[in-house]
Image (cartoon, rainbow, N blue to C red):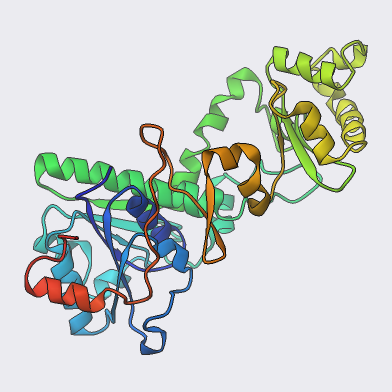
Length: 367
């Protein structure tokens, strides 16, 4: 779908490489510029699965040769991705002004946690720090426990990599119309805050009414996670009245008066305790046999390895294994088909090829 889109990635860690992989999954031609280290030449890079579908070149950006490589690559590229702290690329002589002088149509994508400006812009941080400050961590979990992050999903990927991808594609479309590139400031604090908009919009519906532990998703009995007899967990999300009625029927509670008032918040703690006792009486597999595939809005809590062999996921081919490692297929699908993920290159595998192609002006013309 993105055939013909040309991306230069200045390799870092986390959301930047994921964004570049996602674009490569969708057909973009991505050249990953990795740090020069002779000891690692010809070996998979750390986090190498995120390099799938890319071409890998090794360069030391602290040398003139390395900087010249980037300047030559961006000459005919649509976009560049970098994830350095603010000011680092400028000190290397590879900031937006320099690269866009070389290519006015270039979309310069900057991936950071705190953003390019603000009091914390130059501070170190990780996924859980960014989403705690943005407000995205606040409602996660129960009031009895500290908020727990969904390890990279909300911050690095959701609020970071995917917002950068959308920003880059918007910038590329604009550049093709106007001939002018732009600088995309993709900050995880921005994106993860924006992701809260759906949650914030539920206030009028009474789903979010106050502090953590006072809302439908973190204190009700009908939207919760429960421990089963075997120590595994299941989720229910029977928000709508018809789904709640079906859940009560499945649990044998349809004629118990105390459960009739679904939105009686004062009784939620009592009803939650009763539900917990019920779910603790059967194994996860037994609950799946009773509830999975029905309209009670149910799902077992699975590890990625378990998810890979779940009948629904297996039927859709969501996961696959390569060299003994689990990977997820590209998403979304187009015309009902998932795209085939590209090969995972060794570090610097394409260095000689790319340098040779640059001499003939053919670097972006892949076979």
